[in-house]
Image (tube, rainbow over all chains, first blue to last red; front, side, top):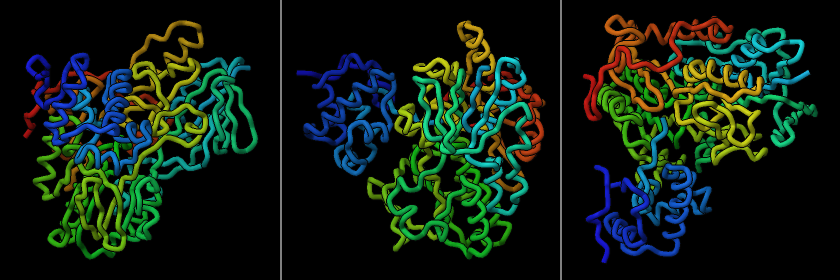
Length: 101
Length: 418
């Protein structure tokens, strides 16, 4: 049984140490975001964000996700309603996607 | 003979070509500058065109006027760069081999990226952009006879050139409609993908308070999906509808097409470079300046001014076979026109968000950071003269390149300046 007791979060609920992340944590965070079940499609997006986010040190933007996964913006909003870039970043244990300057 | 090649003769390209022509030995180097057209645009002036404050003469000058004679200027579109061969193919059939290459081809708007924006039948009828001369001029013509309604400004996605310009357009709209005695017939709306008025918290709070004071409604976290030109409504991906009578769009900004064709860009055709040195991590004889690169700072002329010295010094070191050691700090400065002959100034870098205070000197300023003053407004207007007569002519503008905390008040996030 996983719980979030030992996981570090910032004030906005983003994990501050991406190495603490596990798939079980992702499932709990997804439920908190109103996503009951993570499907294969969800995982495809989460895995993409983990890979690129850890490589660059930044959570990917909406456009990076659509270009990188081939999933349309419309579908992305269906899988992660409201703000997909922010939501995936949260569930994937990455920081908040940086707004541009 | 070696070739120093610059692609794009806008602000960054014109300035670096001039600088390098004066630094490099003309017996060993020739400087070549390529652009697709003859007109140089003073882009910050586009903001004033819709309200009749500037005319064509204020914002357009011939490019050649600002290009020194020892720079070879070629007019052509760019077919592609072959970075592994260090050569560039132009659409006019020419191939140029280079020793050093600077990409400074800026960004363009891409309304075709949003369904219904360009192809829905409303483009330049009741949908306008103001990031092109043609768009800003057409909007000005339309506004003259516009009798009021919902005036909606929408940023499609970030990053955009000059992220404060949409706010300025709204602040000026508030002033302009007030002056014409029709402010009560106009609803001003700002729909932005950001969570608020600006990216950084202290400036977002200060600018957010100004929007509120001026009765400008903000629709935050708004990612536009489609434009329905039949109903005059925009819809977001999360299904929020905003009706408009006049839609002013800041479409997706992307780097030049040839960057994509050359396989050198990111998902928005921006050229990745080291954010401190401006050198390509992949090809060490390639540099990207101004709006064309992917560094995390504002895409704005002031940023180009602040980064120029760093890049020139780094390129010279690189040519001499030395390691590049100069570092750009991400310094950006923006005058924000706020209407009623007032303006706000923000000054920041990679690490420090905009703070209230005085600039460039403590107490005396003369400019006020994050506060509305008339002197800031004059600074904004004076910048046009500075741009045409100093920046582009290679005359040093008396503002320090490096970001400084002098004159700035230390605040923690969540505190507004007023």
